[in-house]
Length: 614
Image (cartoon, rainbow, N blue to C red; front, side):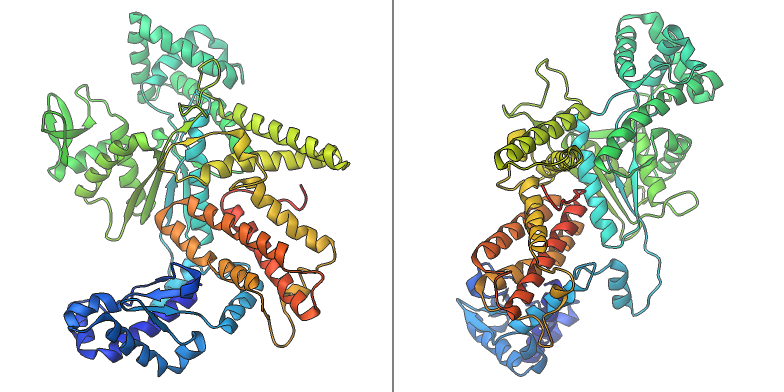
């Protein structure tokens, strides 16, 4: 529908210029154009689109909006290409222009998508070539920074949102054709490693010479023990700080201990990523260590760096503390050390920097919890004032809220501990399996164990992902296994079942391949209101993908897929498909096929595989 909307917009702009040439000339002289303000119709009875551009022209033209709308419609009536695209426009209210696309154009769009693996969604390379008139220009990478667990700690439910939101955004951007660099900014550097390495040397020296002497389960407890000693033992604190200096200085034994801790953590992280089908390139805090001094030098040269109470910092503009004074971003502590802000500044500088000392990105996206919003706002401001972001570059924070229990409080175990991510995923699969076995027993169906395990794993993990992604990421959401595993409502099982239902049509004799790829020499033919409703819903995909790409809100895609499933189920319940006459049967099978393809594509962009049976 996006392509049709763009065509309508072009026709409307041309009609407005013909109807009001003086106003168009004045707008052009001011560096703008007359805007038809085209938008999707607010209600189906108003057609497909509504143009509201006549209203803001009333005052400068000194005419009633309806008179302006009438003049625009008269110009449209004289445009043969517009007449092939759209039914005669209708003027409503004070001057709205309602537009209904011709049925044959809608049917042609459906036909075109049936043979298109991209389902009508253009790639950015094609769009860029069309805009410039030339092909082959390399696209700058988009960086998505997400997940980011800490070494020597297990991934917990707090990492869930960053991981799956970031993965979904990366998938959408990749599908659109952007070269995407998926970065995992793990916490693999800093003062905490001083205490970890000291503790390791003292209580498990065999780990330095024996592979896998400490597994991650032990490593989590190991971290707690080290932290407890650090908090209580002053001698241990001193030794730990000395160990940090050794690590930063490249001491081989300290480096080996650090590498051991990192490697064992990575292996456990990878088990979670493999299970969730997440691809990431690790580039931890340690990667940017060589670039920290460059940050200080740059900020000093630009005149932004100020020494305050021994620390070197940049005072933020427009951000004040309780005392009314500007808040600082500390870049170098009074003891000469660096902190998270310095590392994040180095990362921004590197990511926007030109190769070979940078990624050459033009859009950098950070997916972290909303609690870090102030931190990133400060760091982003410093980076902009330092002129590290190129013209047209975009630096964006994608914040998300907390995962809460059904009591509205932060999700915890019964013992009050943070929920481990692997335990949460295990329980989702176990519950999905129990529900499947119950349904099989009620239906007296016999399925082999491989089928049960495959369906339970797919549904369980899909339910967890979709429950998160379907929420507006900015808000907190309550985690409920019962809600997310339900077969009704806005859930993954409901969407998966819609795909399964269409696969069942094929098993009953409906050829969704050859037969549905076309409907004879006259093309597709639809007569029922339910068919046209489904057609219009299917054609919204390209606009939804464009919206997610721009606004970075995966829940918009979830809402679309849910509404599409609802529309399809009503269509299937109310209109015969397999028992229809041949001409209608072929066209309706085409709608079934395109619905399945759209659901598979959309769910795939959410990181959710589909099923043929469940």
